[in-house]
Image (tube, rainbow, N blue to C red; front, side):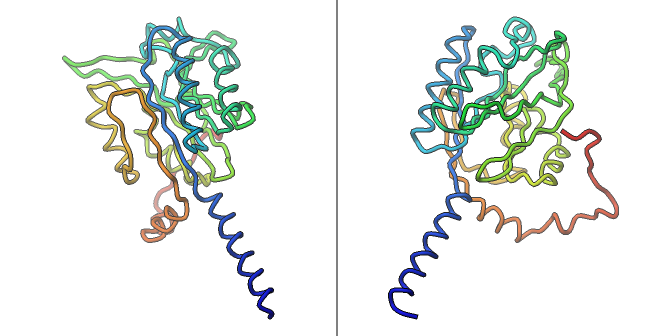
Length: 267
């Protein structure tokens, strides 16, 4: 082989490696938003932070749960809207403007029958609505002397799993309290998801005690924020994740002859 051919072959291999890396590494941005009672302000600030995240190289941007409305059962009916609607239109435009996959946190959604849902719309870089995930597990708790909160007083639960594909990986979507149920994560894993997103708006009673612990139970916490409005970033390396999972191959070692997790209703 001539020196020129060897050089060309080497360059080709380098380009191939770079191209492969481009689809196994990407930047994820998670937006923490200060939500007010003025929906237009919430939408405007969310749009600005999406643009900021894209300028920092993010390819996937995640907004918080109930980002366009105060989080409370009394607010859900007042702020509820259909999809498509005002909030989803803003998110569609923001995703297209910034050329990102946008996980739109969640908004109170009203369907044609008048039912309300806690719904996460997801948009592609072209602004198209990829899917909408309705929160499956409603947050109904009663901690004596501390907090009582019943989402089911106004919301209906979703009944479908939600998965979408990007050039980087397949993504499974949940909302906040959905994260407490490991079966959902296992089902998403069986569907080939390499990234799970759970937009959340936890309270300061149960949140600090459980939220980070749940995340550490599923992986290393590599970035976190305080209570301020901000954007945090993570550079995702899917090959690194694959290597770590291969070191402890629980998928291959699971005793499917004794137990299994299956979806009753596929989404």
